[in-house]
Length: 135
Image (cartoon, rainbow, N blue to C red):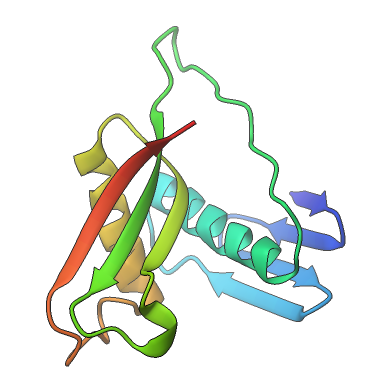
């Protein structure tokens, strides 16, 4: 499936996602994530890629499954007690769809581990995850 926003293109399949834009090319692999986690991971990387390329992301339409209400949309921010210079404001994961804040944080914990943000966080002190509901 291919998505184009402005000058950026996202090509994704079940196992990988490749983002191409003015700043270059970025590819991520699935690594056995369950489908919801994989979608959240691709969405977080895609939003970051768009931001780095100066393109404003457009919001996908919310959908319902079997007549139930759609999950709420959250932004989960990871903060470290002793952050690096580029982590002072935290690491945001946007557009996380989950039924509750705790579920959104669970999804991001797995994703952040796979991305290496929490797996390699030795010496950074305590790690906090904060979920805020977004529109």
